[in-house]
Image 1: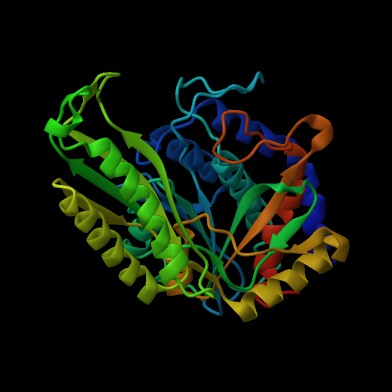
Image 2: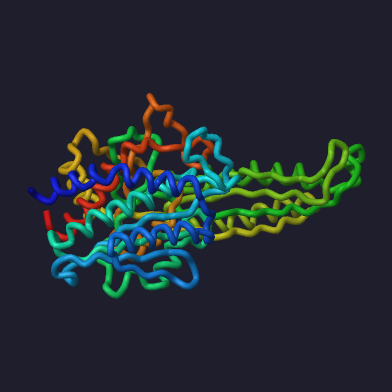
Length: 397
């Protein structure tokens, strides 16, 4: 039996086990940098499989390692994130979150369970392939500075040196059973914007005696949109959005200050730096011109994610060979962000998508929503495909 068929057979055999893993993790979600029980669960399963691993002092990441024949020939790293989000789950399912206010609304439970399944398969087949597999179970993808950077700084790409990094993410806009690839620039950089407009509060009936931070803040939000429309080059995708405006006044009370929060995303580091400066200068100038002041804080987040072209083309071909051409799609740029970008900035990397949408089951809700769920029938695919692509990159197919 060729290696591909062995992987497919094992993927099918362990499917129920991986579904159970996912449901267990889904019911007990943990926020970024709080993934203690999730990490212990991963270690427990790696112990059961007889897979060597190490843990870290400053976070809950886990690094597993599987050595095949001639382990020093090539090293492939496979990554899964483990943290959840501060969202109250509204799904009525047996595995609903037991931690109120915390939910696996981005599919990291599926990523972790899937990589455990891939690990089990690759460990059973370690005498069938050459090279070494590193298993990166990463904390804190959802919160800056990001667990990817922490683990890179802890040396997960070294000793032995990693040649390539592969990661996957579930996506509800692609039907279950299909996968998506995008070469080159794939996901945007992301920064957080915090603006505090300080004026002079007072009675709403005497605006002439006040310096109104609410109207000034509103003008800042509208004006800053021109930074994108009149400064960003058309060939550089850019998004500037504001999602929070807090002015703690009343119907007849103008507050002393207003707080604005938003996000900036793009695909160019030089433009990113210029935009930060324009945002700061514009907000400060508008506030100053109306007798107020503006304090602008921009928290630099993840860089943009680049899928290595040669690697991604090879992995797409492997996916076609494993699944068939009808189940492999090309994807467009996404303005969402991922700290997998740090891996892509360090090593040739590919971050691909696993479709989880199933209209007949009502599994259609977007990432980061209270009704998000996945079609668990994708696990034989997600587990097996990653294993197959890994051994293919090691030169064994």
